[in-house]
Length: 375
Image 1 (tube, rainbow, N blue to C red):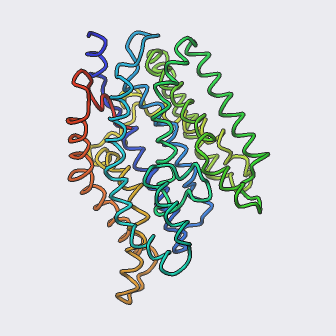
Image 2 (image 1 turned 90 degrees about the vertical axis):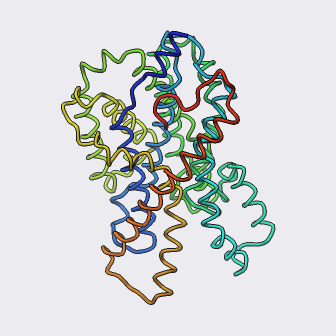
Image 3 (image 1 turned 135 degrees about the horizontal axis):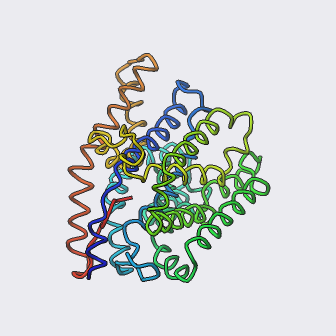
């Protein structure tokens, strides 16, 4: 009981919560650029921002549920864990599908897709299985493909923890880094996303097992953070400098050196950023990401991520119907304000209440749902 009590009192990591907002913002900018060429598409690495979420998921789940004593089982049962994860993602996931459904139906009516494909695609999306059939990964709501991948992570996490308990933290980290590097190189040399083979490109981009190493890497980083935090404190500022330098190099040089966008490199950069900003602001001597406004935006970042694409479709249609053509920058700012306002409202009125309702009714009484910081 003592260990469980200590775990529930682990403090939130406000800087990481805020970073989720910026990662979601990058994805929003990337998708807006598909509609209006406001931003150079080379600048905003929307797909790479999803890698950040994958690594962060493994990190936060471990931070939230790892036992205080090294080598023990998770502090939550598998059933309670899966229930908590479902409560976390499903309410707004289905809300976004509802918002996007008229557009999905429009594709059927206008004969862009067949009835059979419509039914198969809809079934896969509703069951969070769309990424397992990569050419259907972007059906209904484009960003939802990553939730299909996250569903695999959530189901696999209790098993990953059990199977890696006997590994030392160093061995776990080295093994996970090797797995990330191996998968990244394999995708680069054998699954080229620029290939004329569209099926091969979709497989490389969206197939869940190709992203699992990034999640496992996040789990390994979480173990290092939980059990060796004092050591990380000593090198927090150096780690921050390395992380930010690597990020700047990625953003500025990736067009000249496409290899920098390799999933392995982006996963390592994301891991360094996560470890750096997981430190308390006082340790870093830097507090810009710990403000309450940014934390609210970070809490609502999942809603921003999953709702922004359907909202973009409706926003564009509303402007066309009104015969309006705003300047690009104003157009984007109005759209972004719509996304932020809708997502914050959704977080407080739908996402959080629905999560509590599901957990209150489905969680085993001896398990606490949502311990620590939500991923």
